[in-house]
Length: 98
Image (cartoon, rainbow, N blue to C red; front, side):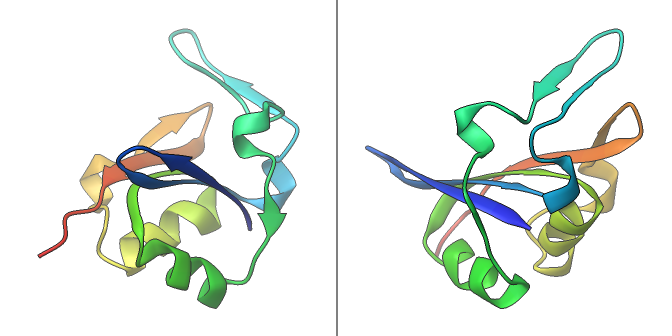
């Protein structure tokens, strides 16, 4: 998986996408995700490394089977909250602490 860490005034935002999707554009009649944009151009990381990064994140954006499955596994996203764009799973979440 590829992850890009964005620093914001509110904390870290993670953009995670499956490696095979980086550089592509996925779209349907209503939505479009440009995975070639700088927002997604990060570094290849293992699931364990991404899990560590999730500890400090406040917002997470994930695209692709593996990336979204990780958010489900970590109980950050429920399955009924996963969207799909042209068959590609997509999810966003705000991580609540406390």
